[in-house]
Amino acid sequence: MEKTEKAIETIKQSIIEILKNYSGSKEDIAYLIYNNAIINSGNEPLAMALFFEISEEIESNNKKHAEKVFSEEEKYQLTLTYGKMIDGALEALLRRGLSKADFYGELWSFINESKMLSDKKLKAFTLYYLWIDVRLPYFELEDGIKMSNEDFIDISKNLTEEIKRIRFILNTPTDQKTERASRLVNMIENLVSQEEKTVLMAHILRLNDKSDIIFSRMFPDGSKGAEEE
Image 1 (cartoon, helix red, strand yellow):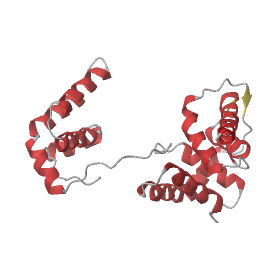
Image 2 (cartoon, one colour):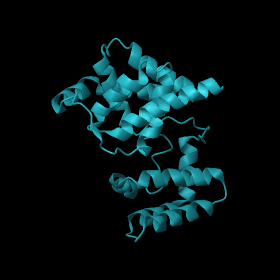
Image 3 (spheres, rainbow, N blue to C red):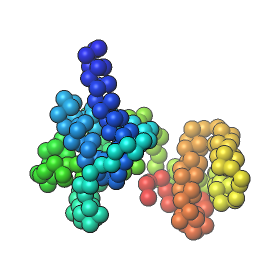
Image 4 (tube, rainbow, N blue to C red):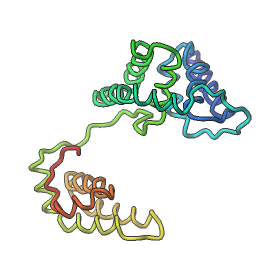
């Protein structure tokens, strides 16, 4: 156990050292991380997981500048060529509800073994493309409440006034975000059943997308159902 902990700490420190000391574009930083902290770390899936988990917490002191590996044109072309494939692979893994260890193990296998990602530069680009994806780092999630579209619509109809109030809260100016947030929290807490709270939260998530305001006016009773849009 102690040996494992030391190995993890060594990998973590090598990642922190790069993130803390280097500035530059994210794709070039990702190349450094891939080349110097992940491959040959002895546990590449763990190293990749640590990178995704701690990267948002580290600010660079700008002591060094990462060597330019990817031009803007090259990044653009690589995104056009490989972006959808990387997105698809990540989406497929996320849908499987894997354990954290299995998720990163399979994600690393995709990077390391894919015939499409044939060289180190492409693999490093894939690491960069995953790094900027808001779906990472990965978390194991508990089972959520599932319901039929019919049940969702029925509960939504019973919450018509609450849904209207949510729409108003979300689109009325406030001095602080916490004011809006606390009002929404209070509305959820005032409901009795978990099903009602879940449906109301689903409407909050939907209505929070300002592009969906027109839709909400057309279907204030939530008649589109429970399925993801």
